[in-house]
Image (tube, rainbow, N blue to C red; front, top):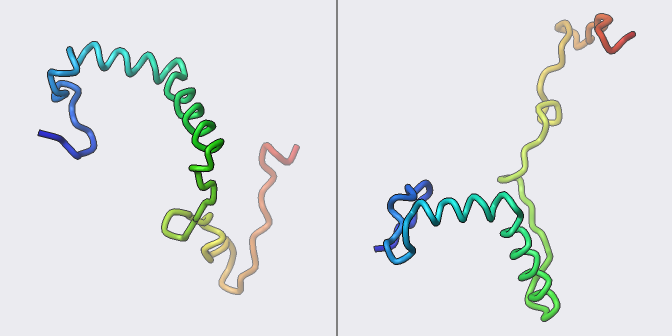
Length: 93
């Protein structure tokens, strides 16, 4: 049975892969030493050389968040919209 979920416990790994502890330790070691990053880079370079990769990027507002001030948040100040003079803090000196 295949599990398609996030957060499946290592102990639920199918027996055909061996001890879950061994697989987990190998995963941690490879993640820590950059093995996965090197594998991904190799596959990307190879597939790009064959013209198999489309490097275009699509970004829409469902995944990009604006800073609170860019979203029209109220500024500090009085009702007329005048901002208060900032006090001299550590960055002033």
